[in-house]
Length: 68
Image (cartoon, rainbow, N blue to C red; front, side, top):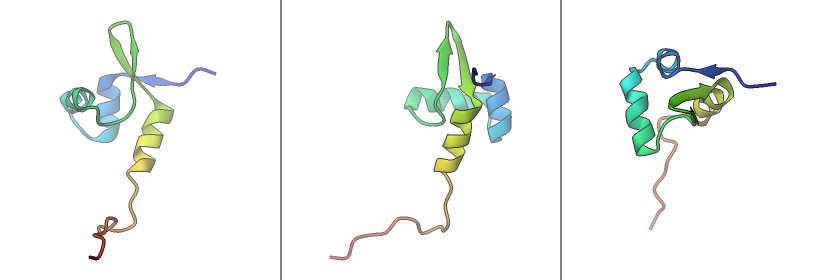
């Protein structure tokens, strides 16, 4: 079964960001994984779910500094 593919605009709306933000993220190598189909950029729903899951945090202090 083929994944459901979303446009840049649809993805931006789902994530609550501007479409331009996704463009900037792609240039910087950030944000969710995407696919190029010809000149079009598409995002698979499964990649968006994985991206959101990777950002899940339990606390604002997830990182720690090693003691010296």
